[in-house]
Length: 273
Image (cartoon, rainbow, N blue to C red; front, top):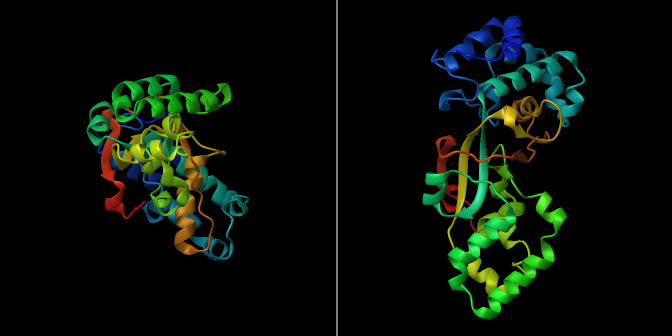
């Protein structure tokens, strides 16, 4: 098993975790983040390696009466476990979910391709422009020109966004991503044009794309984010009133088709517009 020297050194104090890490990659010589079995599902708190669960065992009462995870991270043992969990994720990769309205076959063939908004909007008109009237096309171009300035483009170009869980399916904030085709770089200023928005609702399907990401090349807010997210899942097992830690995740490179694990229609997962 090929892992980073930092991760191996960090786990030297936890022999049981090291044994788990070796078994997780099957002794196949996989590099960090490679192989479906190695990727960490950050939503499964009881999948934390037993040695680390044992280290947390003496703090059950604190987990049960505390709602803010960051309060618990002031305890040295819990902070150390969080770092260990984060290192496991850096070595093995993480599972994450991308929400979009698109074509399943294209994602299966090409993966998730990041690019500039200008390129994606040009492609949209080339591919789907025939669905709109001349007046609608004029309105689309005018809306895009008025909305997508340098600041708006800087926040979206060359990026794909993920969630560590399926929880967004129950939140209204995800509705537009699944309802309107093409992502924010297409629909943001167009949803206020009813006739155009209606057409966008009829293109593609609402999809949830489960992917294996390299945690070292994925960005989230805060320090040791993967350890915090994973520990938060454990916290929620002990205290259902605990605040979940589920930040948006960002990648700034294409996600290859080989890293796409499943593409599921959101309606099959209980989402309805």
